[in-house]
Image 1 (cartoon, rainbow, N blue to C red):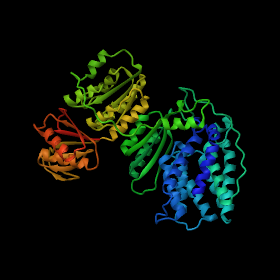
Image 2: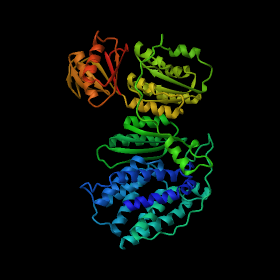
Image 3: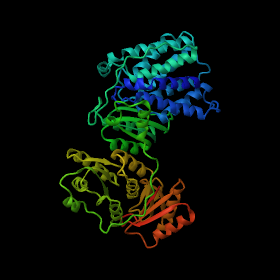
Length: 568
């Protein structure tokens, strides 16, 4: 397995430019060879890091190696072809892991499992692609399954090559370009490498005839009709992933969602082509914890003279910097900007290169903070018209909306659609609390592409855990137990975690619980009904108990919640 990975990676690198030039489906972005090389490089790194480690007790040594390959490929998968390759490796690992010795029949069974896993990963499988070539390899291996391992390996490689040659008959895009499928070509090369490792013979394989792929001009639609490729890793439960998959399927195409095989949660690789980047990332945020988010605009993806090295750099260029910048001490504006006042002062049309931010917030202190960060602030629970006025008030053609509330988020999504009709692109970052909005605004960078800036803001907001303290309005049964009217409730991420009778004690216990899971910066927003001394008592406790944590306290003035807490 180790020798196959090394040989396969070396083979892909030799043919990287050739495969890039074949790439016309699902979009002519000329990066399939690069993506396969980057994916298998990640797989080999995972294998190398575990070089001196034997089997994990649940599989054989070769099964353990395959699981490392599959895991590394999943975490480092690039593009549609890379994600599918990771599932082919996972299918092989699942089938061969418990087998004490891999012979011809076992390899045939494993190739079928790999093909099935690849098909299952794709929302709308298309024939004439990498999937077809994988299935043909499994078919040929099954027909030769009575033979020894070398014979079955050769049969699989031959069957894949035959299927690859027929791919232009199955996909009109390939026929028009006069090429075979790029991902399928990559798989054929990997199977040729397997033949060489198993038999010691180097297969004689001609290079498919291919003419260079025309670059996609700016503004020109791709063959899928979608402008962006969005990809991210996700930690989430299977049921949440199922709901996210249905939502993403409605947003775009080339959807591939694959997991690491964990029955309860685990890591998933998500890939989709969309026009609405914000909605795709938001679906991931709702499902779980997305990270290593990358966005590629197809119009930027390939220059006519691009080299494999530059293509790899382009693929890596869109990965945002991890982590969030701590919220700085805000410079308070004398008066928060009113959306309707700003509309009257706004220019007649949006500035093509201008950017703006709109935040929904309740409380004069919070409004001042957010206005100080350059945002147009809308009072809580706005109508669609009020929020749309605020978007127009920015005078910008690209606007980020931070709703800070599930109800406002639904309104913001409607505003994004209506604003698009008037030439304004609105991306909604699904913040649930003003502390998340502060974290998101702190990382804004006008030097970045707008889409990359939205990603950075979404990651910063997602990295900020939020909580609030309030009093129960009536007797109720919560997930933390029964409460009575007047009890102090501490909610983390919307769920009741603590019930108490003393506001200060409960607030202190809440902060301790949140910092127990890690944190470097705590933001405290003090509400309109907070008693004197609440913020200072909590701050003093943090300084004494958590000396390496930075604390920022602001008068928020929000109703209903004496204290809002953010931990980054």
